[in-house]
Image 1 (tube, rainbow, N blue to C red):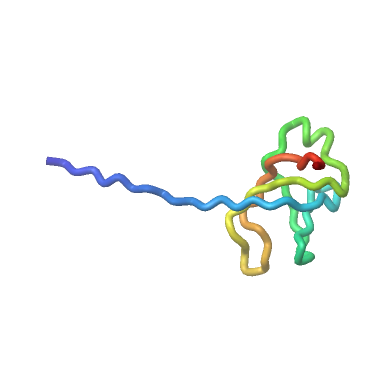
Image 2 (cartoon, helix red, strand yellow; image 1 turned 45 degrees about the vertical axis):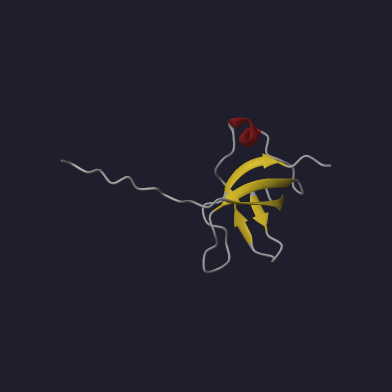
Length: 81
């Protein structure tokens, strides 16, 4: 008889909202660290990027030893409330 072990992979997703600070989709965290956010954008967002100062939501998976979000990926532009 053959037994197959099923494995479950657990991942944790973190999200944050920060302000666009430059034309290369760089983000500035509350602690002052600036990093590039380059994945997750649609072709439309790439042709017409959000304005500087726009608040965007992105996801990430923890932080590097330097405090930069790991694997940061754009999700959406935050709509003002």
